[in-house]
Amino acid sequence: MPSPAASADKFDGEVWQAEILTRQRPDGLRGHRFAYAPGGRSHWHVHTGEQALIVVSGRGLIQWEGLAEPMALKAGDWVHVEPGVPHWHGATDDSVFVHLAVTATGGTEWGEPARP
Image 1 (tube, rainbow, N blue to C red):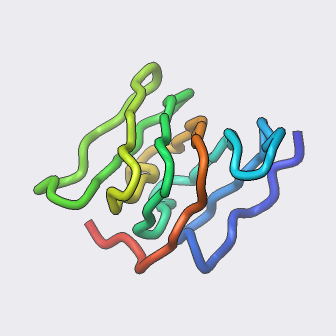
Image 2 (image 1 turned 120 degrees about the vertical axis):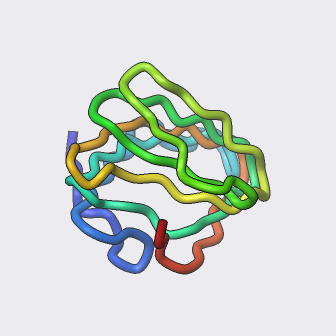
Image 3 (image 1 turned 60 degrees about the horizontal axis):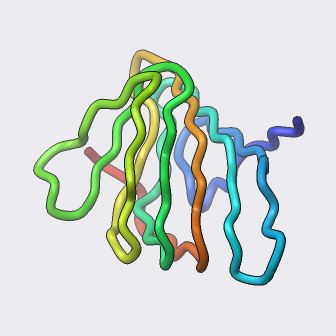
């Protein structure tokens, strides 16, 4: 499965993104696999539809608006991200991190880099 580098204007560090589920209809469900090198992170972003993150391997972090500090993630964990909630996710500084992201309808609005 091709895994090109993720966009540098949306991610910091080394991050690779693979499309694993293409939209079957306009504004439909989509899925990606993200692999982060240690310290790689997404920028803050907001989804207009629901999203589920399923951790495949490694150790990662997620933080959303209103959460005092990032929450630790490990293989087997999953997180439900509510629509409209600003958040970021990525690898810890000492581990790779791989997760699946299944996003319902809508798009993604991108913001500033994450600085935990």
